[in-house]
Image 1 (cartoon, helix red, strand yellow):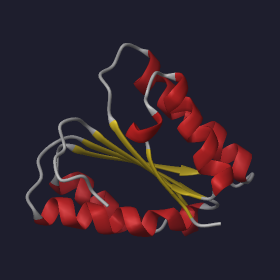
Image 2 (cartoon, one colour; image 1 turned 90 degrees about the horizontal axis):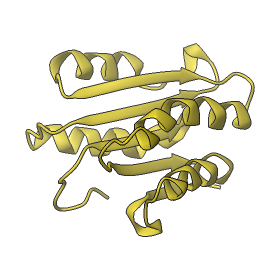
Image 3 (cartoon, one colour; image 1 turned 60 degrees about the horizontal axis):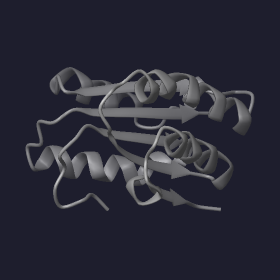
Image 4 (cartoon, one colour; image 1 turned 60 degrees about the vertical axis):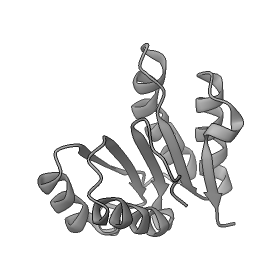
Length: 133
């Protein structure tokens, strides 16, 4: 669920079908005319399996504060984690302000990504997670 108050950039990170609940939250945010910064990192096993790809591209075109980063990890779960962490590390460790991380995917994906946030100084409760295995 989305928090009732958002005071920082929202960073959604989804592994494949973990994008489904995040898409619902994005729809809710933009239905409420949310204007704050949002980053979505969506990881799929193949390019043709980037869920809601055209819809998310359209969202990025119509909302200048929304950034969409689709990643393809054909090599499996570990590659998905490695690609995601390579995108996250500059965001977390280069003196940037804290974000609101919301992660969804399998435990094998979510746990190492959450660990990266914890390593960067986030409290465990600050990193919202949902797993489906």
